[in-house]
Image (cartoon, rainbow, N blue to C red; front, top):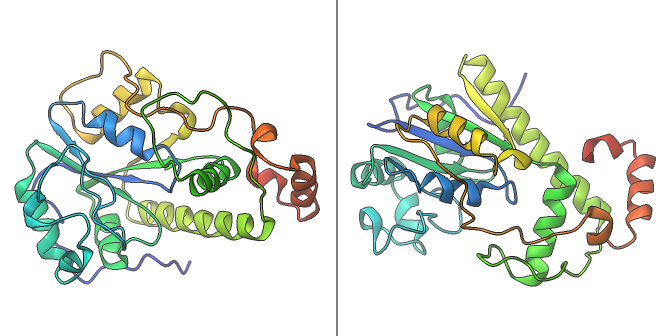
Length: 254
């Protein structure tokens, strides 16, 4: 099967310490999970270190981590291998992690995904839920919040073609990720968005990524931004559902 995640030319281990990836997509709960894992005293989980627009260091990491700033991805892009080495060396905890999404560096995606020493946690979410959450964030300008929503957000109008394009790209990415993991015989943990606030599941993730600690409770560093059902959050929901059925895509978004 032809996939977009190529076998890397550089096959040396990426990190010199226990490391893991949160492989996901926007609005899949990765922000919440990153902050939860950083509550463990032996885990430092960064964000999107290889986002093309910025360097997503952990929000708890102040100043210039490893000599880089969030708003200067050009310095990272000039030497990605040197960048990740410096981040690894500067890590203040025993286990290091990061988030990996579609459209992040193709070179580092291939290296990280093919490195069996890097533990993989694959985060997924209902594609329609993820898309509506993404569109709501774009319209409101609120990408994360520490305060509970007081009322449902204004319903969004869905462009069906944009929704299908989004879902297709994400589905292909997840297919590529799982194909690489299966072909290389790597163990991974599959987590659904609806599971990330379960104490038992959080402790399963903590053990899986190599932490020697466990959670005693679930904190709420980030609140759900979009309460309410899909019917309440989508304008003309019956029309959208009918169009998805007409295109034989309704099962895709359950």
